[in-house]
Length: 447
Ligand code: B12
Image (tube, rainbow, N blue to C red):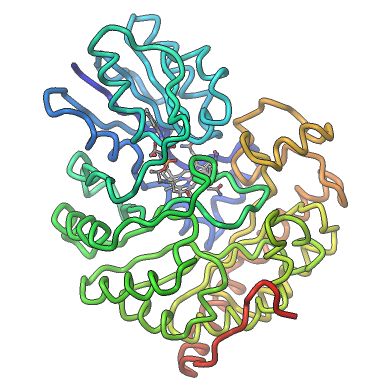
């Protein structure tokens, strides 16, 4: 059987003004270029779980208008996030017209399987590793169809197969992803990552992570840069130190996402630097305690840690690891004062990189359910606007227009050449001053 694995890919912005201005900004552009060239780890993983007798090909589609020919296959398997799901549905419809079987999986269809079933023969809900073997077997037996769900079966990352990186043309990518963990113990109401797939925080055995890095080095010999497709890598500091120790000497540069508690552990930061960690992406979300109030549903952790934000950035950057500080604009607790507050916070703390996005209600999240119930989603079902840049909800303490225009103006200021240069210089001087060895107390209950 010929299986075409089709990843909906590329960077999306719906509003043409945002696209035009945003994509010329220095900081935004660099990240845009880097991420637009990432392959789909989910499909490379599923390829590895496909019996050898099948002929598997891997394809990326950034713009369906530019796709003249559909890849030839007996089964078309789509992976997509929310922003491009309608494009995936269109391709699936075209395949079905030709009588080719289709299956789709990923975070969006996990939240809305019935919607996906209108376009695809089969829909996989949850972690793909659990259901994919059944999808392939059913296809072979001529009975593919309906919703395939993990039904409470948890996939153990100790069983994770080696992703088939060799299906890629290495020269097309400037970085590749691996996943060292899935899930997050905290529950931010807006979070649309793999917390939607698994209620548990789970880690991949370190030996497997190292084997994946070694595999990437075989496929991609030219100074590999690796991005961890993780939700929150360093929740468990002991595991983090062991992982960093094992990565020392591998000669890779890498980047991951985690929370500010890494700043509690200078020893971990020292090991991370030695292990080639270049950047930590951290969700600060708002510089105001009021903006953070209630967004982390379990222990109000973001709100309780906000007093430690400044020290955490200084401590991490003093170890020679850059911080990519992420802020969400339009949170219920923030009013129009937040735009200046973000700028002031950034100018004061000088994280090397900064990311601002609009609050985005992705289906499957508590935020989406709440805003829908409150009648605050402007255009329900406008999935193409789920880009993290477009606004499709009514903010509580500002107008939609304020969020759009002031958000854009803030972007222009933060990503200007001058502000970008100030942040780069700030990082260099924080690093030059040497590591701050005192642990930053970021524990949630800290006064
Ligand atoms: C790497 C990455 C990218 C890469 C690669 C995307 C790709 N094609 O895989 C690039 C740079 C292209 C990208 C683009 C975008 N991204 Co992105 N990205 C990520 C990141 C960092 C990791 C994703 C990952 O690799 N996870 C690991 C894999 C193994 O998990 P998975 O994809 O969920 O797959 C599992 C299951 O879902 C399932 N599955 C998935 N697909 C399929 C298909 C089949 C057939 C089956 C059976 C199963 C299955 O099985 C897999 C294994 O269990 C996450 C953040 C994070 N921490 O997760 C954001 C994230 C996925 N991105 C996000 C967004 C918003 C975007 C953009 C819209 C940004 C933009 N403005 O353009 C675009 C989306 C364009 C699109 N394709 O729709 C959101 C998506 C939220 C959502 N629910 O839609 C996330 C969660 C970040 C966030 N801030 O919330 N992204």
